[in-house]
Amino acid sequence: MPKCSKIPFARVRFYEDIPKLDAVEMRLQRFLKDLRIGRQNAAISAGRISEDDKIAPHEIVERREKIRIANRAMAYLERVHASTGMDHLSKEDRARLVSLRHGLPITGISDEHEADTIAARLHDEMPWMDRATEHVWHAMRRSVRQGEPGFRFPALLLVGPPGIGKSFWARRFGEFLERPTTKIEATSEPASFSIVGSQRGWSTGEPGKVVTTILRERSANPIVVVDEVEKAGDVTSNRGIRFSITDALLPLLEVSTAATWQCPYYRIQFDMSWIGWVLTANSSDCLPEPLLSRCPPLTLSNLSREHILRFARREAERRKLPETAIGAIEESLAAVSSKSRFPSLRTVNRMIDRAETIAFMPTIH
Image (cartoon, rainbow, N blue to C red; front, top):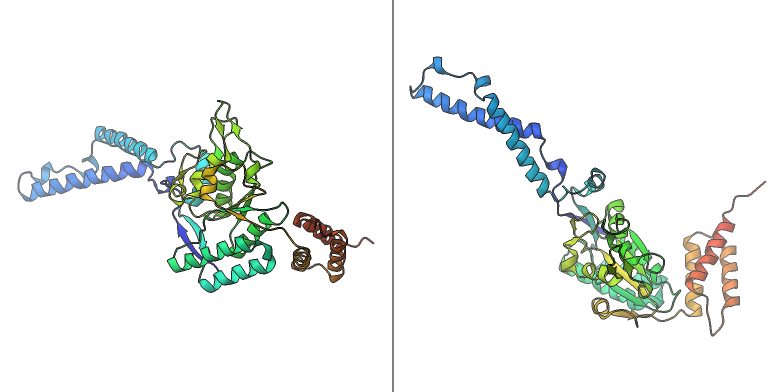
């Protein structure tokens, strides 16, 4: 079972830790009152004043002094609120961040045996993804040897034919690590904004999908899959500023810059250095050099007929489909397969989805 630690995630001071105005006023009044009573008692002991000249405790702080104390208390709290890093946020946005007050958990690898087990399970399920599995296997063992509180690995760029299960591999890896996984489709949404969010200088301001996942799942090291990254287009603000997916990703792929990354929406620094990034592409030809230098491509091979049939049976068994349904799937795959072209994993999964729907459909009397 993966080990778990906590890290400070947001570089802010939370409002719940700031005293109320009346508490600050009372503390200042009590300090002044105790100071004057002490001096008064010392003067009586030294014979400088008599008991008859003694001022009653409830009168020792005058009304005008209480007004000055109230003004100083307000000025103090204004400075404290400004130093929290959250003073610019709305009440709703501050409420969203309350869960970060005591930090967030990160999961790690307990020992090298666990690293070996996870890698073996991945390879057993998807042997054609051996280069990716070997990459994270070495990273897991290295994390154990270095005694890191959580597991993080260098960002992966998986390059291979469409439909071989690059994103599926990433999701299974996240499941074995017991970490939440979120997927960003670079082709169907403004990928750069989906990753980092947008500030109010754009047509709509909202936090990115990555931060939203972290807040929802209460985990500082989710697996983030950016699918078909080579097809992501640029976006333009209503001020004419262009922003690309590379602009969004580069600060998050380096541990040093990700640890103090500032969210465009919340305008707060978050520690994003524990996120596991998996980028997928059908080709790396059009990807910019800065991205490739941080994510050297891992080129993957295509599926074989044996790989497809084995995957179909294993996935169907995992979903607890009856043997008759599994046999029908295998027959269909064998019929459509040829030496020149095999069904993709997407096709196989759709077949399993349909078989699952039929197999567990309620009987209508």
